[in-house]
Length: 373
Ligand SMILES: CNc1nc2c(CCc3ccc(C(F)(F)F)cc3)c3[nH]c(N)nc(=O)c3cc2[nH]1
Ligand SMILES: [Zn+2]
Image (cartoon, rainbow, N blue to C red; front, side, top):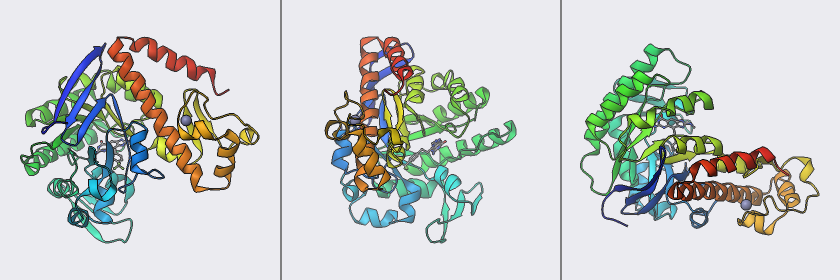
């Protein structure tokens, strides 16, 4: 652990990199998958078990936590790390994306976003300055700029307007963040699927100067081909010596393709959300445990997996507890899915370090082509 925030790349393979983001709360091995802990919990998991799956860092959410229990309340209780019993790094999103995706009673202006709480209808005014204050009160180690993520599809004029607003908000976020040694502020590139707007956004962010750079505005319904099309150029528009975080991504094959294109950090609700719906993510692809074909199957989900679900339970059991709506069903599949994601990230890190990423990716796709046996 270090007293300051830094990024060291230990190996490259093509455009992919592997390394360490060092923070005072602990190191983050990259490429990294960051489990989503929206309301101060990774749903259906104890934090010590999230750590056991291999996670170095969790995500928290400004939007959810400002509404309930409130940022000042968490601060008065010792901050988010103590509150949720996670003493390693936490990254928090700035709240704008969640406001735009979770509330329809909202007003977007130059100042910020006025909205009503989806919990009790009370009115809030989220600005770059208030978002920085909330993330400071929570004690977040990596703070995200307050930005606007336009819904796709959108015409070029709308994309440009939105990106320009986000760049003005990035400057205000930087000014409000101030000088906080050991804490990091990440800028967020916008610009939709437009290469020229993304270039302009990257230049604007670098002029302001950030500790890391996120690629925002993707994984909003554009599809994998369009997303990879942007990733064929966007990571290279950002500084090569700083971490690159692709927000909201993604499915295992999204992550593999994005790592090949130079992305270092990922977050996605899929492993936890699908774990609660009975969907297991495995080397062979997705397996729906609610399907009747598992009713009498004594085999483990994946005999090569060392997680508690695969070590101690049959497919028949997982099928039963999901059909019966038993809490252990969510616990076991969330644990397996997060374990699988971390194993995939470890495999990617090892392959890049060995200069064997192409072989790893070929094997990844070949195993999935086999389908679930
Ligand atoms: C799913 N697709 C997607 N997610 C996106 C996100 C949210 C990422 C996030 C962060 C924290 C949490 C928490 F629940 F753990 F807190 C949950 C999700 C974006 N966030 C911002 N700021 N700009 C973007 O342009 C952007 C684009 C995004 N595409
Ligand atoms: Zn497993």
